[in-house]
Length: 115
Image 1 (cartoon, rainbow, N blue to C red):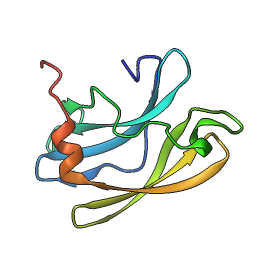
Image 2 (tube, one colour):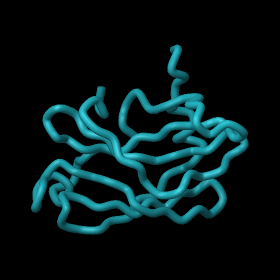
Image 3 (cartoon, rainbow, N blue to C red):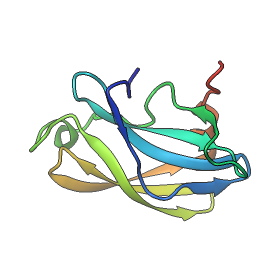
Image 4 (spheres, rainbow, N blue to C red):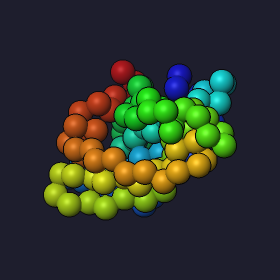
């Protein structure tokens, strides 16, 4: 999987009616870092309801692919306004960037661990 080698937490989880949405970074065995998401139960947040089987963000721009440590995106903060999550992320351990996501669209990409 895209996050098979290591994972790291992002910013604080986002409360949604479906559960706590956590955006995190993960890397594969080739040290390619991407962003994904998982959904935690509102009452028992240690229970994973669903997660990304594919990244929600990959390294595509030149500044994400080359730099101090290339092929890396990792999140460390966000602002929420309605359905929009503005994620602040590091790229290639060289620059700080921002990207906007629809929270509902992220939730629709998640799959339960059993599926």
